[in-house]
Image 1 (spheres, helix red, strand yellow):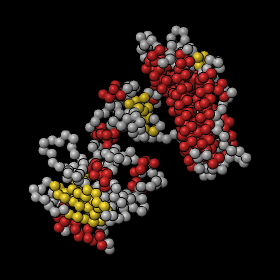
Image 2 (tube, helix red, strand yellow):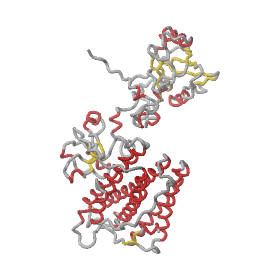
Image 3 (cartoon, helix red, strand yellow):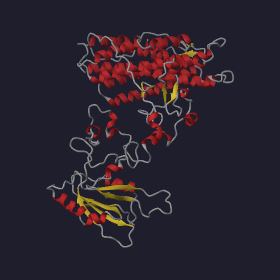
Image 4 (cartoon, one colour):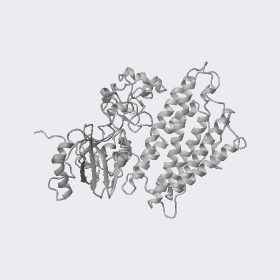
Length: 558
């Protein structure tokens, strides 16, 4: 015996946050929160604003064809649907329900089932809103739809419908009911809506639209470039176009560095409608084959208690993030600007510098983000009452001096060693993860520690790729041709830049304190100030580096 599958997954349709659902599961988090939308068409919610009836929002065509129906814009009655409407049970004791069912089952229903009927007006609380302009011309559907969204829930609602496209005027039909609530008491979308109804008016299948959702537009589930699942060390570190047409091993070649060059090599519109299932799942930036084998779980040893973890965060991990930020920024500015190199002698160098500069910038920003997250762990532990007695959270924005050096091969090897899986940074946060997964700690702190812990692998991969890219210039005579001859400047040479480093740290200090005190407006103001200072500092650093002067970042801490 077989049982039909009924799409009645209440947790998937819940309007409130349900345990186990991702944050994007609710309509309030949907990218389709307006028409026409990507995930849903919200006009379809209002299509059932009145019980027992389904309306369509019709917009006047911009360039109507000769055979187009005249006067078609407005709120069109698509059809009657009252037999299983949860607002209109046949045994309802409500007089308005029985009156409305009588009309829809009777002559009015027969009339509404034939011809083109449009909503003419809505009335509630003694106020009538006409869907026609003063001269009798109907409002366009999109504007009329806005009127429908003004209807309240508690008061009786009366609507008038008129028929268009008939030689002789037909008497209007007047119905009274209540506006539909789109969710029930349990927070679930009303069962009056049929499966697929919220998406049926979208212009294309989702795969067709998905084809062009690139970069930060649909980034949560549409990667642009991915890493192969290959075990070959060279291939495994090559970024591939996720939408590439050639899905064979021969197609695993480096993605072009711009969309114009990539476009001819990618699955096209309509083609993706047929081949979307060939696109690989992506986990941690890697395409996954037929069988996914997760990495073995960390066996890190938890800290003895919260105090030991707090000490390690304050004295080692957070300072390490700041030290690495300064070291990586110094290495970034040691790289030539692409326009500074001789492209005739080194034809690949401008593109390599663009890629390397971008990659190390991302890593440096990542370290600044880790610094913020490490501080967030600390202030959250204090807010949760887990700080040692007599101690309070103070922002950690200092570090012992590190090594400031250009991005030569020795520096790259050291950075790869620092960021390697199982290294000092990686294992440090693994201990935080192992500690914070214990029940006594707030769950969100464990999630934050996992983010820092897993991000280190991305930094390791990026430095490995930089090493692979820049090795091409190892045989050059004299100094490495992609590097500026930069040396740390004196305090006098870099006074203005160091002042901005200090200003940046001061702004971050204010932001962290405001976050600790639950003052979001003050925190946002301080973060905005830090970004302004950072933009100025970047310009100063480039100008100094062009003269062979590197900013001695650590002097700003003295």
